Image 1 (tube, rainbow, N blue to C red):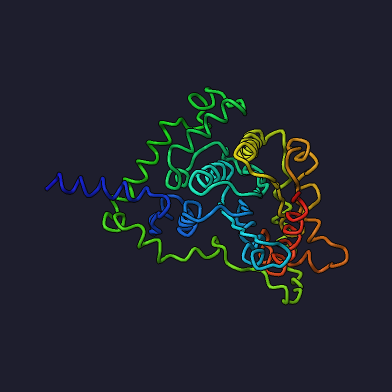
Image 2 (image 1 turned 45 degrees about the vertical axis):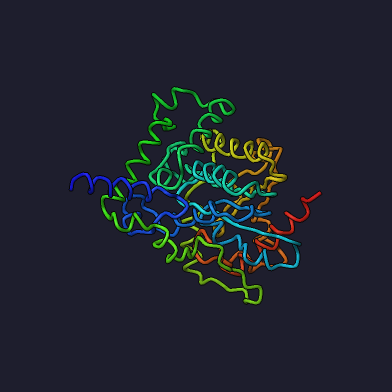
Length: 343
């Protein structure tokens, strides 16, 4: 009997770690602190579909602003297949792993868009090189090992960072973290772990899915003064990006850009999505362009602060996320930039 139970647990653990069909159990929120829908979007990263023409990767700001459903229906682009992959709470390392997984399973997108989001901007202290429980649950060891090797050889991340300063987890430590996560899931609910595909298939990804957001026919909305004051205070109290303290974010971003070019991506965009009433000193994109001359920069501030459409700067659903009207304007402008970048 103990052997049968152990076998069931091991089987459930193995199934639970199939990141293409990760089950959306409530306990995933307790272990990772993340919405289960975010974990289920790995179905898209690891599907059998052809690679998209345009893949955008970013935070919840990307989920709110980059309406790939509208882009795919737009007459501006021909034969466009656009997708987005979204990670919240600081995502530089997970985006790198997701891109490597996407290419290995589906192929190379023609255009890659990467949101400029810096983990430690605004006082956050989590080092972006640290793999999280989310990383362990979503990604297999192979892309992590490849990324670590790339960071060491191309981005000068030293062995001391891995084995002494505990910033970058060792490859063995990552594998153990993945096993620990799978066992934890299996021990809590072995029957559900054995059938993750059925569990995840019933889960709507919602905000993180490729749902349509943009409604160009909507009217421009005016925010009330109280909400405007609160949101502006929240956004501008975070301070701007300090590049002198963003070394690890820049290393991971450089690694992702280099990997994309190496794999055959034709054009890489680095795009910035502002918060409500964000000050001009939030980020100096000229410094980004200087560090990444092999990319194209898209700044959504120029769209939302269009002097001919003064109400656009108020098209926000929260302090950090545009509403559907803002999403339409940002998506339309970004798609135009993508089309202009084609040879």
